[in-house]
Length: 193
Image 1 (cartoon, rainbow, N blue to C red):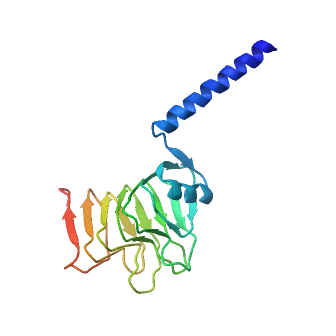
Image 2: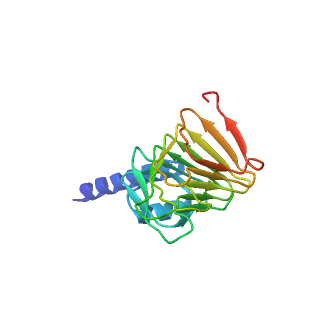
C-alpha cells in the first residue's frame, strides 16, 4: 500500500511540474465557454477555442491571442455599443476565428487604441442599421491588420475607419464596404494587393 501511495504521489508531482512548465512557457489555454472567454480577455495570454462561444460585451485590456480552428465567436449582446471593444494600447490577435453577429441589429468590434490582427478569419452577419458602427470600427491611433481575412453578409459597413487609423491589408483579404475619412486613415497594402 505504501508503494502505491508513493507511486501515486510521484505521478501527481510529475504532472504538476509538467503543468507548471507548460504554463510558464506559454502553452495555450482552452476556451470552451463564455466564462472562459471573459476570463481570457481579463487576463490576456494565448488561447485556443474548443467550441463556438457567445461573446458578451467585453473589453480587451491585455495582450491576447486567440486561435479558433474554425470555431465561432458569436455576438450575444444587442444593447451595447460594441460586442468587443479595445480602448487600451494592447495587441489582440485572432487566427482562424469566424466572428459573427446575430439576426438582430448589433455591432461588432470597436478599436479605439492599440492594435488588432486578424489572420484567416471571417467577420459576418452584422446587421447595423446606420451610423458609425460596422463589423469593425476603428479610431484613434490604432492599427488594424487583415491577413487573408474576409467580411461577408454585413448590412452597413464592413469597416469604419477614422481618426488616424492605420489599415494593413495582406494576402487575399476581402473587404467590400468601407467608410474611411481618408484625411485621417493610412492604408498599407501588402504585395498581394
